[in-house]
Image 1 (cartoon, rainbow over the protein chains, first blue to last red):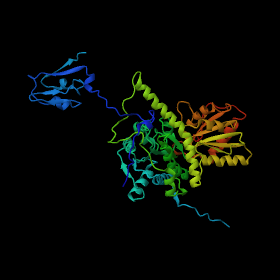
Image 2 (image 1 turned 180 degrees about the vertical axis):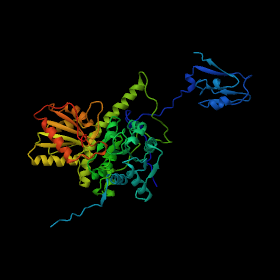
Image 3 (image 1 turned 135 degrees about the vertical axis):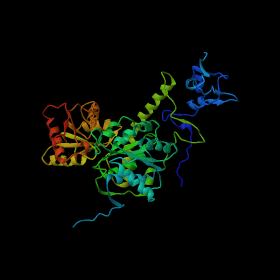
Image 4 (image 1 turned 180 degrees about the horizontal axis):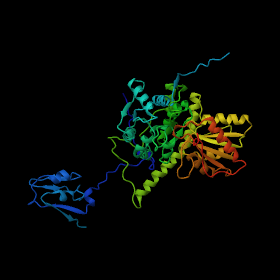
Length: 96
Length: 407
């Protein structure tokens, strides 16, 4: 059963006022507009993974002895610091 | 002696919902999605049956609600499929979020609105309030008068929607109860001829879900200044141009239909006994039948009255309406819905706006009837004609006349 037409794109023939599409990859990441930075105190971290569970963008990464945030995707919301039962995460203002 | 006319094509005795379903079958969509809502339910039930019986070779998605129905079809259209759904009333209200997105993505989806009045009070009966409420969202909207016109317009809708200078979704509207469930004789167009009429589908040449050419569909576009809002502005301008282009395309689609199938319908505005008329009533949808009968009776009495019927509501055929208005000295507009903001009917409001481009400003009266399923009978239209005739000699009331309020 042939169902679909094969899309053939010749963008030069498509008016630029027709349908909103983007074909260039945007390199902007959530970390590019973060104002607060999570800093983990390794002495307090017991690797309970509460931060990993709560992070809304799944940016928590596992290191050998503690959890850390992937700063490319961390948007600095501070939920990890709020939820950490050991007070091991501190939110620090980003420098300009 | 009576002559027996042998029809060229298959004859059916069916209601408007089944007729719309046959129109869909003949248009050969790839995907149909639906969620039942009165008075549309039997339409999607017919389609489910047609697919189960192998009459229609399409995917059927019975989604969990109308929001999903139209979202599913957006995906199917982006993948290159011809698509169809139908809804009305509260279902259309629940569909509003993807409904707004569809014309902006320029997806040529066809959808019937089996028009139903708006709640509250709780009401499952006919009225055009649902379709009128969404007339400013960017869909092309055509209102049908007869069951045959429902079938034929459903097919024509694909030709209009997929035209490269249009690329907009189309609502084919038929009145709940009177068209959705009124049973008459219709003729089924020949499939090969419909195939030739519609030609090859070309749905996603401008945007596509295509692994070979990855793209973001509907990216964030806007901001306080610069290219973002400028792009947005160009998309809106393009949509408005597509709408205006569709006026000519609708006319051509109807012309070619008449040529191929021998049935002609007024594409934008129908003028009925208007050329020598002093005044006219304006109608939209299935009520036009009773209106025309009453015009005939009034003509027999010597009244010089005509009728103007709106088929295409969006885009509003301003010039065609202005030309029709220029032929008479007074008009009375009968609406099956309410324009809350102006204390009148929506077609009345549109008529006033179009009159700016007519030869002169003439008295115009708003009449509202047929709400919540009420039949607009010849009795009501007789009153509509008499009230309109009064405008020729007397003052023009600023309040609408509610035709069914004292039934």
